[in-house]
Amino acid sequence: MRADPKKYIFKIFLFVLAASLLSLGEAWAQSGFDSGFAMPSVKVDMDAMQSEPVPMTLQILLYLSMLTVLPYLFICCTSFIRISIIISFLKSNLGLSRGVPKQLWVGLGLMLTLFVMAPVMTRVEKEAYEPFLAKRITYSVFLQRLSRPVLDFMRKNTRTNDLKLFISLSGIKPDHANSGDKAKYVKKGGKYVRTLSAASQKFEKTLKDPPFHILLAAFMISEMKTGFYIGFIIYLPFLCIDMIVAATLMSMGMFMLSPMGFSLPCKMMCFVMIDGFEILCEGLVKSYRYN
Image (cartoon, rainbow, N blue to C red; front, side):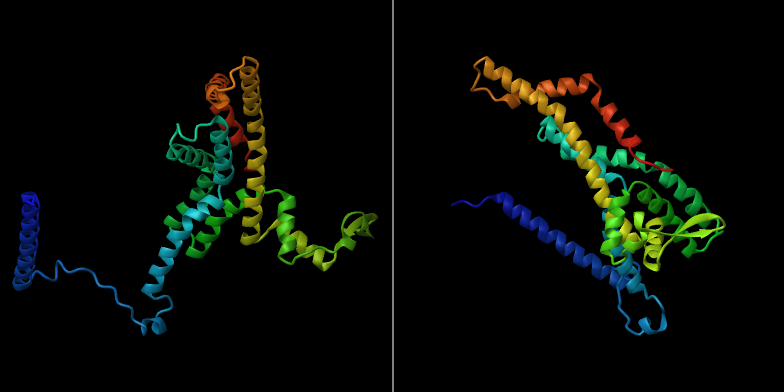
């Protein structure tokens, strides 16, 4: 069996390339240029952890961890949850799982998310970023002002029932004897004022200003619930079109034809004629509250 000469030529080329690189490295080392072309070395100094409050190695580890967590925070703390669920329902109901790339649907969700979160980002820029660049506030104040607009957005778009659920699950429960019709009222200045127990006061205070872990869980559940509500509404007209097409084909005796093949162009035509993307985007943007 005759060997292929192209393989030998390729091997010879690799050998010559490796030899030239080695010789070039030795020439640099002999001429004293090795310090300028040396690779950066990473050293872990255990003594630095005792002398410095936050050593560089831990800072790098913290930054890498933040880069890993940031995509999940973007998904969980923004409107991307509701928008992605609704777009997923729209894609499945239209039957375009193969016709349109997934990257295009994700890009549409990201575009709508950035548009919805634009007022929040503008507030962050004015209240936190610009004063911090001008050195009018400290780093701790910058972090507080950075998170406050996002937390306000999450709080205003979270259902009160979902928030109460996770506050109760965290161990903060109101006193039922001081809630509803059983609340105690004390006459002060000619008026009856509602009095709350210590547990109920703590519950009401947490409800007005919930911590991040409670607010995040309640916001995610609330967004998923709203997404499923809107997805159900989107599902109904497409279901009617499928039923009409299936009944029409059965009445014509076309049992061998797939109803999905005929309903797909009908659903696409109806969705385009009513300008479905404009209606969907308008409803999504208007469904969020900022004030």
